[in-house]
Image 1 (cartoon, rainbow, N blue to C red):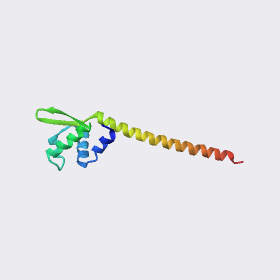
Image 2: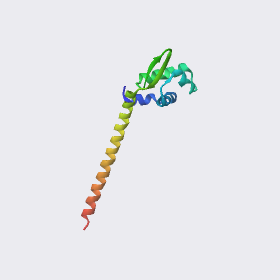
Image 3: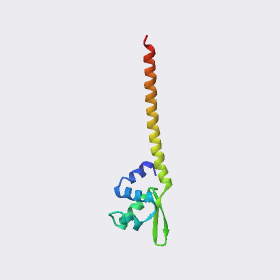
Image 4: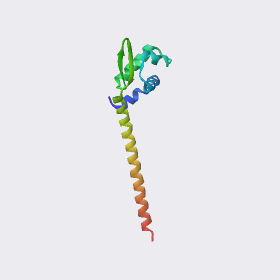
Length: 111
């Protein structure tokens, strides 16, 4: 899945809230549901979407499913933003250098 699709998955406020809860520490469906105004089945559905997007993983502890953030999915999002930021910095640098070069040329022409 592409990073932009993963980011879009976080567009839903409930999924984003679940994601932020899991950023604090791993949690079970019940523990997550206690912190949100949604039912446990709704939390499970949102977790399934996050899992399909590669943003969370889970392990089974008895009858509980404990979810945590998936570092691989997070790395994909971070790489996307790092790339975006690097392009912006490179563009800024090119404009700054061009302005500097043009300014140097204009000051050299004056007698």
